[in-house]
Each structure stands twice: as structure tokens, then as C-alpha cells.
Length: 153
Ligand SMILES: [Zn+2]
Ligand SMILES: [Zn+2]
Image 1 (cartoon, rainbow, N blue to C red):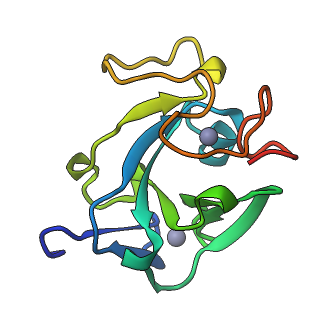
Image 2: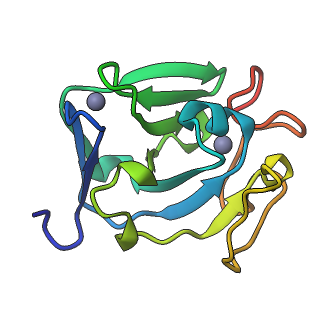
């Protein structure tokens, strides 16, 4: 069992595990097309952990350079979607919430890139929704060019 205040997770096959020893800085559900394709799901939820309080345990993930400013982590053995790094948010690791051992322990702050939301996929929460990036974080993504599309973050 992880200590109180620490968070653990990993991929489907168990080869890649991680541990964070700080509370998440932020949680977000992203509806952008690159997140949709990377996950194979209608939207992808992330929590951001401070890089200084995060470590990969065991095997390291593989990283796909999804744009000039972003890389996406996955397990090369089982294919699980694990996370994302963005140059503009280099102080943190963005972990896919579905890879956490206990996703119920983290909170989501807002929705981003709702302009790309799949129309039949919606949630009943009252969280802020942003058509593009959230006002809460810096972004290199350009208008009409969500994170992961070439030339943006
Ligand atoms: Zn795996
Ligand atoms: Zn996204």
C-alpha cells in the first residue's frame, strides 16, 4: 500500500510503475484530437505531479514525440497510455488518471479543448470548460491547432 499522500500507478502489464510523493498540482480532462488518438478514448484525463516528486519504478516508458513541444509516454510491451510532457510545463509530469491504482483519490479541475469534444460524450460535472487551453496553465498550443498536432504543443 502506498503511504498516505503518495500516489502509485502503472501500465496494464505491470512492467512500468510510478510513484508520486506529492499531491497533484492540477487535474484536467482533455478533449483534443491527439489525446483522443493517443488513448483510443473519447477524452483523456490527466493529473500533473511536480517532476521533483515523481519517479518511474522498474522499466522506463517509451516516449513518442507528438509535436515540436510535447512527448507522450506509453508502455512498449502492452501499449498502455501513461502520460505526457510539455516543454512549457517542464516542471511537471502529466500522468493519465486511468493508470493510477486509485483514480478516485485525485480531483479534476477543468475540461480543455472542448471545441474538439465528441458530441455524444459528455459528463455531468459543473467544472469550468475551456474551448482551448485552460487559463490555469501556460500553453504553446495555437488556435485551431491543439496539443500534439505538428507545430503546437
Ligand atoms: Zn505495460
Ligand atoms: Zn489533449
